[in-house]
Length: 120
Image (cartoon, rainbow, N blue to C red; front, side, top):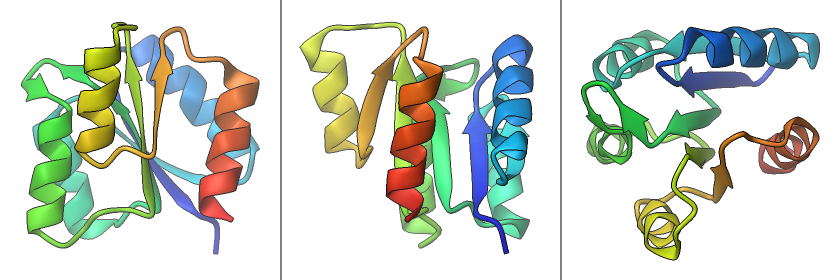
């Protein structure tokens, strides 16, 4: 059974590209554009890994991790994506439970390598 990745990102261009890439790499993929959508997906399909945009239309993406933690539905790993390269944002993501933090635009080969590492 392939690992399931939940992409939580509000840009359709990014989610479309990542969905194709991850499916071609053998993963099952779910997509959510908001925290609310991600919580709905999580009710029926538990992700093994979440690729999480920190800035979402309905709030700070890290809030999703708090809610999933409360529901005991956290994945093996969460990888954060942010457009803010400052150390404060990075530390906030790590403190919230993210395994890694990627600065946008995310380097695809490095992202795939790190996903494979976390799902091994």
